[in-house]
Length: 198
Image (tube, rainbow, N blue to C red; front, top):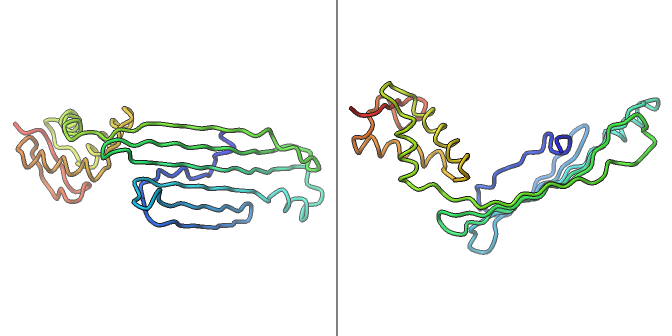
């Protein structure tokens, strides 16, 4: 499926705004994207994106003696819904065809390939995030941005959601509670540093 998804932005749907539509074209392909909220009081969002190449047409029209044929088409869709404040369900589907061969006169694209994914994501609790922050902090000063990134990836490995701004907020709370020491400006993750309190 790598040939099908190469260059396709598999967005994580975080926004629940009004519906938006976008059409783009390049020298080799065109794509259309639509996304929007789920329901009148949106607790989720949806996205549909499709692409079609026309490089094969260009090669036939401009390079009449071209011995290479390349083409692809694909469709990606994703739906995200917040079941509760701490639980979210996600479903996605990718389907498409591609071709790269030496017979430009043949129109047989590769067989349709499809990949799908459905998952249940839980939002990490404050206690969980605090525990991870303290486990990644040490006796030496460490950039706040690094700790936030480590906690974010640890939550992702456990199929839990945790926004980076949420993690940064918990770092500042632990400093306020005296569990971490800080230096620099904690309002900007790259400028602040923290370590375990003695």
